[in-house]
Image (cartoon, rainbow, N blue to C red; front, side, top):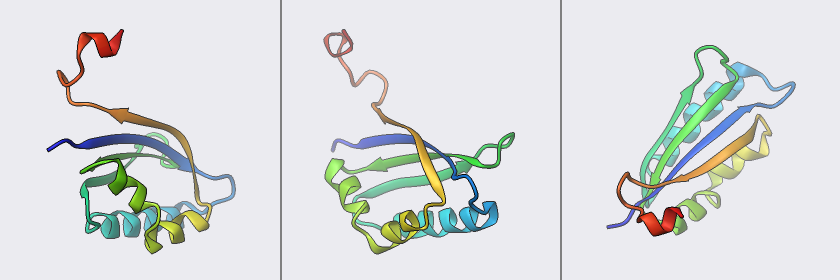
Length: 103
């Protein structure tokens, strides 16, 4: 079975409340982990810069991630405009890419 891995960096929007954001991310993670197709959804907080977070995600496929953005809890969190995305990385397991794919 193939898996779809994502890493994303997000940070607090200007003017957003850190505690509200932490609570919102906690709820988002809890609800997302029970979604169909979600293998892993973890959010880690930067120790030196508490307004920055890293998301580690593993989905059964791209469609499962796409479906995640249609879930009510995801839409509810995003509508609050508490965070902004700094980067999104699509990741592969080491050795799963061929040399030709990397060229």
